[in-house]
Image (cartoon, rainbow, N blue to C red; front, side, top):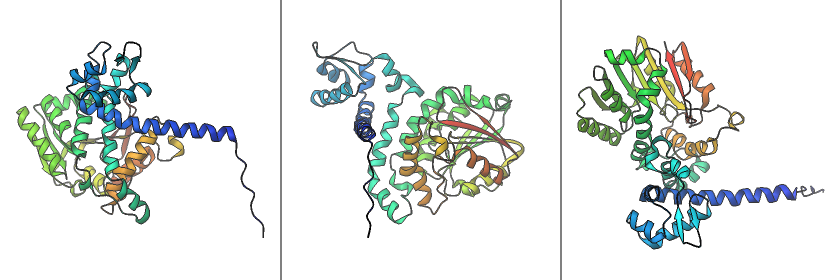
Length: 359
């Protein structure tokens, strides 16, 4: 009987990886602290202050000083906040505020850290899914609609009308003249309301299976006084061509559908002959190897595991996942009946690719 010799270890490589793990732990826990700073308004308050003590920062934010002081310890040692030890003051550099404050609009990345607590809340169930399959149902993600509304609203307000819609040649003029538009998987409906406000001669409808999301959308439309926007609780897989549209949009919603092929086929059949399907979805490759240089790949695969893939599998769905990628997207678009598929990207947007599809 022979035994295999223990593998030799490159000590330098082992030490480097241990350092990487230390960094991972620091970054992971700092992520939760960034979420706290975002939710409590600490970053927003600090952005308006000169170098200040923990007591001054706590007062400006209306918070408990002891907790603020401990939070500042994390922010300082993690390199997000500058600290003058002699003066006992703290400062949020403007360059950091550009990624951490609500004033930054779409540039604010701090809001994304709120999704960490959603993931933490279902970790036990995800672990069980690793063992037995299946998925975690959408109903378990009780804050998802509101968090997505917060994250997407800033983007839609800043870029939807002036940047995204003009990607389709001639679309702005058609919207001004008046066309029929549907947004499938509309969530809290902010995209529909932004378009309806910008193009009063066009008619807009949003579909989503979340009653909560449709409720938020309907209330916003009423508050804005919109008469050309409506919303329906509807499973995207039930689109059957009975209503015809000039434009159908989907913003980051195909990859988490239980039946994406059926959804896309229904969208294709629901377009008028000269209609356009504008689909924004995650920019990525359909292979792991192809995403090695993607700056957000680790985060996106994790989000997929903890939400997008698992909610699909919970419905015995296909489980495409967040990183289904360009190749798979084109495959499904063609299968659905789209004969033309063009890809567009927006400078500075590393998250999405925009597909312009026609029959």
